[in-house]
Length: 209
Ligand SMILES: [Zn+2]
Image (cartoon, rainbow, N blue to C red):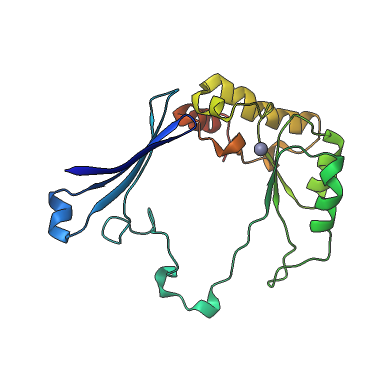
């Protein structure tokens, strides 16, 4: 049985917070806490989150969020990972900043150079500026051709839309910037707006990793 504790709407996304218990959970004296999101466009369930515990989440397929270190490794031997990623157009406005940030001579504690990833969108990008950043060791990835508004367009986009946007931008980076096909592995959807199975199928079929 579930008890709805809150219902609301943010733009076109509805959400329900609920607390449920079932036979299994009752035995464990645990409540099942969930968050459901669905959109007006697709009426599709996007996310169901449940309370995570070692009983329902085990490595290597699952790991509960938190500050505990996996496998009881000592703190002193666990490196802190910092990921540098930037979205949108590569243009003269940002080029100098990227060059300073990723300039040669900056190293991680293990001696490897500092690196990052640029998720590049088509609108506003000056392609001549992309290759020099790739040559500095910055990873280049796709962030769509159009980066179109509204952000909810992406949640209802078709398979073909995603092929056109994700693979299309990769093709632009290959053909107009000269970045090797083998170096472009990733795609980040604009606004981080997940695009249902259409997005994952299109990315998989297009060879994104
Ligand atoms: Zn963006």
